[in-house]
Length: 92
Image 1 (cartoon, rainbow, N blue to C red):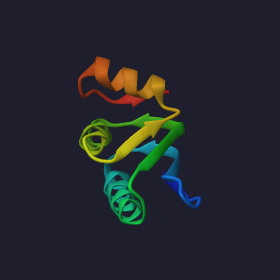
Image 2: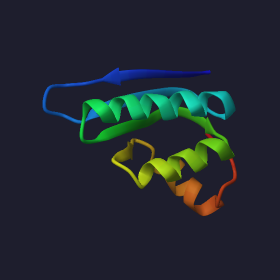
Image 3: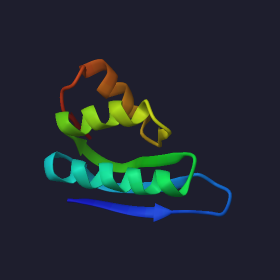
Image 4: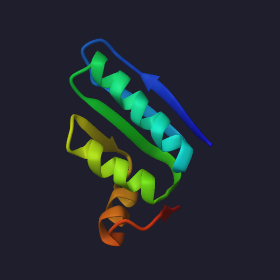
């Protein structure tokens, strides 16, 4: 399961706080939420502090989103592992 909480403060980027697992069916939901948030703000932040698992599909989405105006925060371990693993699933 993946819970996405939108946090928007006036004049700030939109933050999407993620809790749970980013995998198969939840990846398309996350992608849509990022698109919606990008329509409201110049920058979208994904808070990965409560993410426990990311599968290959989620990793690919993260790579695509990072090329746009989406930035991951509080996910240093996840992102380092994603880059080191080259597409393998990440599990905390």
